Length: 423
Image (cartoon, rainbow, N blue to C red):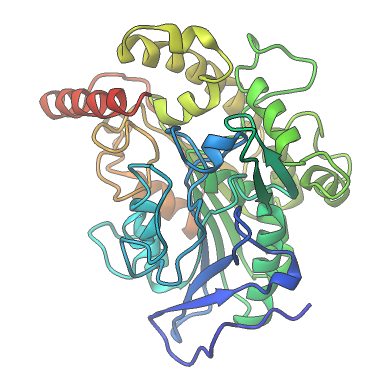
């Protein structure tokens, strides 16, 4: 199917909007058009595809981002001026304090900016920015009806992330030059997206060189037949597989099994990490997250482990979250360890930045690992992209604050914010 560009792209260094036609099956969760944005340069064919973060949902309130801290972003669809305005031109009824962040994308990560205080090689590349608006971390292919919060007003929700992503890959292949280097980069929910769709984009676009960077959206071990005590992410994985249609005939799991026959375990989403490393052994794949990330941990565990929410203080809730989160890091890294093309960068904490969620959102400040002599995550990104020498692997052992006074203050303020939001 031909996927036309909205308007005519005759300029460079400006954001062009691409609307995927409704006839293609693409859409946001509320049925409005899925659109993404392209910023071209005539100076290189290198291209970075950015999959945006922004939560996910599998119930009525969360899919409306109503009364729920964790939900699917852009519940009202993607504004036409998404890349240039911090306030959507569509009425925001989501109720989320972070709605404004996800209505103006340029400040979300240095990878989306041509110029920023944080320098990254891809700022001089062609940039393709994919907002998230389907509540399914780019993996769903199911129209679900949610009525758990208000049965009198059921919500029909289009989990079309898998469909949208495949169409974006085909559009890039048809409308941008073949890249000398393609980087698939995603943060938070987008990190799962780039892992799930790396093969789709790589095979459609056929770059001469390709890399993956997944920040703070790990596919942890969660094999079918395990227990939540062994694998704390298992209840979440079980829930989303049903809600988003991952295992259904048109779902992403049967499709990936057909793409990588025998290389992964359909009952364990984490097996995709190593399947990609085997299919594309010449590609460098980088994973980064923070050991003190209570945001992704809370999303992963709170609805499935009532003892967490029963704790009276946020400090005790966070402690329980991190026990489970850090337990999952070890087998995740061990599973990827034998693959020479997988690198990882795991600081302990990043106070002052969304409660240690993401090493690449907003800036690269506070992502240093002093004990290893690494000044920031930039070093890891450069190692990934340059392709010289072995992939970088660093896990911070110390849990001591790098900046004791400031870090303690940041943690205190973060706790106040999240306490008020009901985290």
